[in-house]
Length: 124
Image 1 (tube, rainbow, N blue to C red):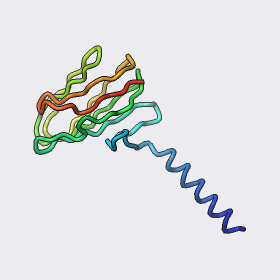
Image 2: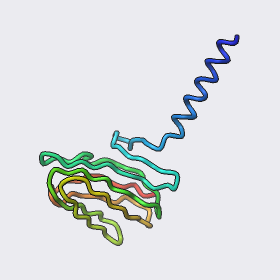
Image 3: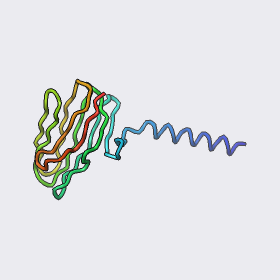
């Protein structure tokens, strides 16, 4: 009986630790993180003429910061088709940008450099 109680306690602690983790993934496995303030960080990688994620659906909260962590092998530009629109130039190396979207809906984020859809932001 004592073994069952210990096992149950261990499972409960493990589930609580996992639930409190700030990292996660979007519906298609894209790397995202939410912090305690509700901000969402999206990891974006540009390498060898390709972008990751590509065409991902990412849920974000209206009025909360959206942080882009960009790692690129060449400079380029991202464009967020929100109202107002946001454009970000990034350099070769690491670039961090932040913005908010107030209006709920679906917003495309594109790489103008590669002419590819990086993500669709599902603003709720």
